Length: 330
Image (tube, rainbow, N blue to C red):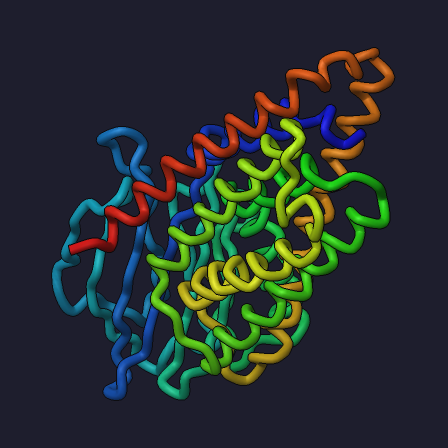
């Protein structure tokens, strides 16, 4: 029954990058040096050749020590400079001007010399924040939960893998076992990699994640041709195996964000909870789409929707695989 929603899942997945492009978040990082100065990194999305009109608004006690260095990288403008703030940043307010006229957000990361990290998100409705000496536990919970949800919902490759599993698995029990196996597996490697127990180069992991999607898409087609493979017979085992790889991908994203040193277990827990919540939202949306299609009499489309979705998912993932392999080969 779930196969009938294949075309809808594919359309949703392919629409993700286009829909999120205009609201890509900016990124502001302030890192305190041993001498008390701060290194500032500000990454602002480009819209075509034009940079979004965002400017950092520092507290009055701060002054710039050198002209910012600016260069364009991967669809964004990257600026670096150094500032000095008399008395530090604790208790002071900083913000981003120009944010209220855009649709984007700004992820802010402030790291003190003691490695304590404050993480916040500035939005058009709340374009400034008060720097805290130690982030409140509630701030850590809400920030990392939201980041986990957003990461899975904007992570098109992870969603395509889940979509392929939905197209492959038959029956509610098998679906529950498969999703649970995937959840357990990526939770294990997310924790292990984040805590430094496992270290694997990121680019090969990303390429293998894309290849895992190709594999499951091929298994969907083989099953429809009367040649069921391992993924059809033991979907939970395949989900668990590839879930370990996807967990390493989640860990790489979390490493870029960073963790507050005083609340690492809490931040890690709620980032993972956010990932699971986003995954369940996607599965629920897929099942609701199937019910809606059934009510509209779209069951007849299942004969062509499933192979069309499998070919679409597999082709896109194959392109990603090739692109990612070429990206790390010498």
